[in-house]
Amino acid sequence: MDVKGVLGTISFDGEWITITKTPAGQQPAPVRLRAADVTGTRFKPASRLFHGYVQFLLPGSAAAPERGGPMQGGRPPYSDPHSLSVPHKSNDAAGKLVAAVEQARTIR
Image (cartoon, rainbow, N blue to C red; front, side):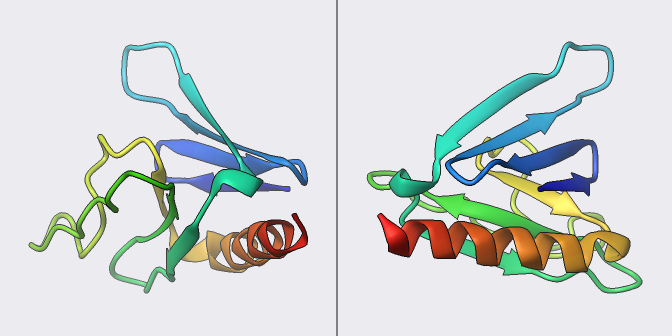
């Protein structure tokens, strides 16, 4: 299951979540998280004007705060390795991915 985000993708294979951000001019640096290690998820659907985001919470780390302003639109900063901004067209796929991760978390 894959979600195309803004400058990156999120993949979930049933056990591992892979967030691959593609910054300009650099090689992608994927971050892998085990679904069983995730303590919570945050999903803010995108509107037609602003991108939304998917964020995964891990034990011992605080969630990156949403940043205000017209350019951020209430999303965590790009530097947060456990989140990715999503466009409006990816809302359905992102919602399904978050639901699958939540289901995998409860099965463990």
